[in-house]
Amino acid sequence: MLAGLAAMAGLAAMAGLAAGCAANGDPPRGSGVGSDPGGGSDTAGAMTAAQASGPAVGAKAIDARDVAILTMEQTGASLRVVSSARRPRSSFGPAASWNGTGTATHRWALRAADGSALASGDIVARGALEAPPSPKEGAPAANVPLATVVFDVKVPHPEAAEYIEITPVNGAAPAARWP
Amino acid sequence: MAAACVGLTLAGLTSTANAACPAAAGDCKELASTGSLGARIDLVILGDGYTEAEKDKFYSDAQKVSEGLLGSETYGAYAPVFNSWALFTPSAESGADDPSAGKFVSTAFDASYDTSGIDYLLAVNYSKALSEVNKRFPEKDVTLCIVNATAYGGSGGPVAVVSLHQSSLEIARHELGHTLAGLADEYTAPYPGYPDGDPEPNVASAAHLDPLKWASWLTPGVSIPTPISDAKSDHDPIGAYEGARYKETGVFRPAPDCLMRALDVTFCPVCSEAMVLEFSRLSLLIDAPSPASPGAIPGEGASVFSATIPALADLMITWSIDGQPTQTGSDKLAIDPSKLARRRPAHGRAEGV
View 1 (spheres, chains in turn blue, orange):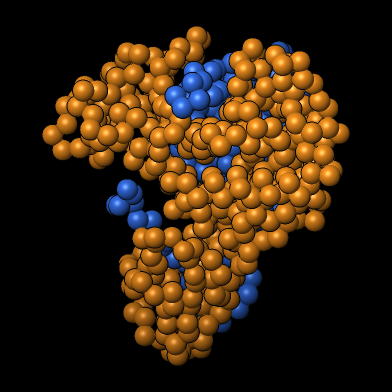
View 2 (cartoon, each protein chain N blue to C red):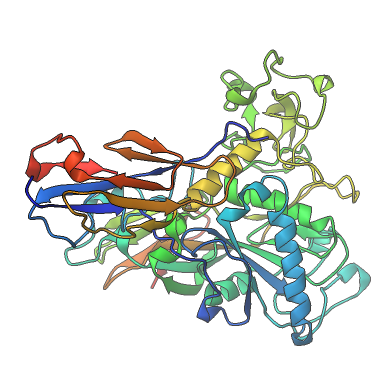
């Protein structure tokens, strides 16, 4: 059925070749090591250009940081963090910045102490319960808006005075701040 | 040639071994482990309505659900990019609430039929469920909750929820189409207040029929729009059929029928493609690269690079140097740097492998 969809794994690597170069050391720029390969144009969570300005001096590169996983709960005009966890970026691989696929419902931003955005991305949260029709079971389709919307978001872990801000795209609730 | 060294990195490759349940996961069982947590799509199966005495039943049910999901069409061909885990959480009582039948039980995640008065709409307390997973297995990519009840039921939402009824798993297959690939519903039952538009890969509004976003899949000679009377089977011909995204008119879908339109049908090619692209995006398709991290190789003499790939049909390895394909089909490549053509001055030269 999927003939023509043959995936191809391209092995790409950069090799810096020079007399007397160090045998070890940081990965070459652009090598992909420590970077975040996840995220496409329609994939929520991909970091935006705000990241390009880089983290505060002394802060660890944003795309090499641990990942904070926040469980968010939005009820009416209230948006809050109900659970948080921290894991190494390598635990997620390409999914480290994936926050759902589809039309963004929320946005996250990593902000410095002065409020400037160091990185940001989209989030796709599901705000309704849904079931497709099942002719076999005689069940029609169902779509029911949720009074309480719950979702997870993966973000770069803030350092020092930095913080994470989560904002509904539709402005239905004030931004939530963590920590 | 001066003694040279090569700092070499296989881009972004970290998968080295199959994973086991993380220590923080507590009562957890590996259902299918094909690679490390960072290299695979990690599906966590949560259970509700299982008492402590029913732990083994939960693991058995979760195994069946995992195999039923990852063994089905589209998912099955890509099962090697999934890990699957069962996370046990005991409930005080067995089963689920069924308010219309006057049944109420105490469970970990408050599973209940009859949500919003729809008897088969089975849902849980999502704050409790997602918080539990975040506490014990935050590395997950997708969460599915199975409920220890046998009547048909389920739902998609913050977490896909299914009962143990044989048909319920179809709901999970459909819902992961939303979660993973951002697919639109293709059925026409009205959804008041749903925003207009056609951003999803499997629907097109009347204004976007030419060119169609799935033009490469169109059956040659098919009429656009495609009358449903032209349908020969669920997925043939691929065209543009009116009726999708909760509307009878004005929005078009690729196939006569599809899992995104109704249960007990497989994904059409357009939806399958979207799923496969997302599988590829969220997983690493290269395992156990050697060298696994930046290192040095002698400036002269052959050094061997190797990697393995998941056991996926049609997946192949292509090695390239400076972006130019060099070798295809083998999981090993031998390079002698002294025999590589110099492309830049020695101190600034870069070679890609």
